[in-house]
Length: 315
Ligand SMILES: Nc1ncnc2c1ncn2[C@@H]1O[C@H](COP(=O)(O)OP(=O)(O)OP(=O)(O)O)[C@@H](O)[C@H]1O
Ligand SMILES: [Mg+2]
Image 1 (cartoon, rainbow, N blue to C red):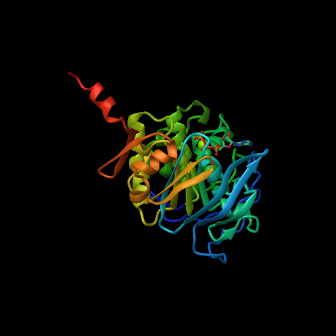
Image 2 (image 1 turned 180 degrees about the vertical axis):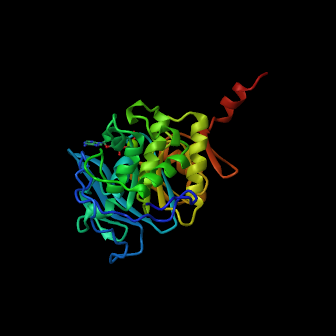
Image 3 (image 1 turned 135 degrees about the vertical axis):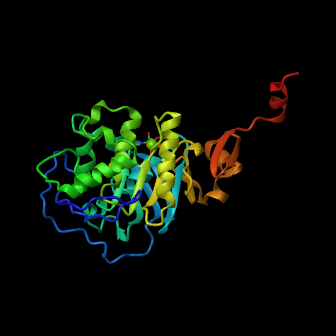
């Protein structure tokens, strides 16, 4: 029998099983693979480090000259206009894309010199691209469970009670245990987001990467998700978190750092208090913005010039 999972948001680390064939659709992994060792010899203590990282695809420079270091315990938000390169940055951090030039170190291993399937088992990822790849006719329980083998789509791999208990527990923590038997393709946008986040936590990752986790959620669902992410962010045993967002209103409590991108380049990166300021956000989005913080939650809106403000006021 498996061990029941009764812990807070991030249960005790489960036995990670190393996939034999990575994310091959159809799940070709075999049970009994060696457990992943976290005692690999590390290049450095950084959780993620990019040095002069550039990605060029089909002649277009997606991101360039990226220098970014994430330390243990950090919780980052990545912001920037459409096309700024946020998803590209995240997919390199997830070892799903390789840079054209520069050096990338993830969880102590150098990208290009480390077994990426070992690496991917230690990284939780939730993104629209991954969601599109998940089979629509698969049950929600299997969408979450298959992450234990780092496969997309149920194949011949087997799951024990521990896997099932953990998947159900994570679904419950994301408020969607009742969806376990539903087909993934029948879920609403918000339900899919939450199921994906449960999937991304299945292997108890050391690094959790969420690309626009709150996009498509209604106000209640967004706030519920932010509460859950906030709990995860403040949990010292939780994974290092990097989330991409379009809105400062979607930054959960507990986020410690912000990286702002524009045109594939970093505008600013550092602690949230000194980075998420009106001048920096205005430079990033190219419009004059006012930034507010109430009870640790951020908001931003267009800063109207005084003449417009006077005109808008009732006589
Ligand atoms: N294979 C490709 N060839 C050429 N350009 C690409 C390719 N992939 C992405 N791009 C371009 O790179 C830029 C960055 O894309 P990316 O998806 O990283 O932006 P983003 O910041 O995530 O945008 P959004 O906020 O809209 O999700 C975009 O202008 C995009 O059109
Ligand atoms: Mg994107």
